Length: 264
Image (cartoon, rainbow, N blue to C red; front, side):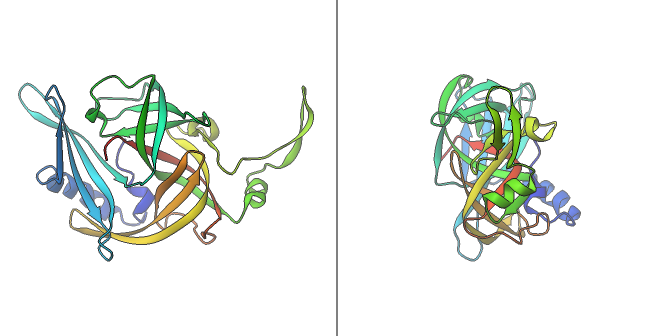
């Protein structure tokens, strides 16, 4: 999947998005903080970290994936992830047919709540073996396509059309509401075509950051969202989403690409 610039770069900055991708390829395939080569020496991950230029705190990283061919080295993927302090253990239930040599997508579930959702892998080749039907620790971050902020759970259910009585044959009348920490397959919930997840979580914190990626200064917001599988950092731009209600303890419902990073 392409880098999700639309999550954290203003929609109007089309020229920046095009130039940024080109400059990322040029800069980070020549100069990296960390290089990983697979055991069979056919896969290479090049990782470069970026920091908040004001606090010097590491915020995230750019990961370039290269494949060694018989006569050339081919760049097959560029990805951006946010750093997370929370490690999540997931069961990688099924590899999705949308997967490719560049990107792998899986249906996963957490071992405690068994919440099923879709993820995209990052640094996949740091693990050489097949990961389908395995339990693995990963660091998660999210890049939303759609996002809405609610004051509380009652407002969320009202706006999204839940919280009403419906007739269920085996139970009679029942009020159907959305849980404040839902994770689900985004395609089932929204009809999206590509692998994604529908997530609801409570805002524990958020902060404005300014980072330098490939010599471009970029301002955006990181929301720390308490979800059913722990706290996930989320990258958003104020001009792309309505964040007027954003505050601690507000609820966020979003459709997003969840990145699962295998490396520290």
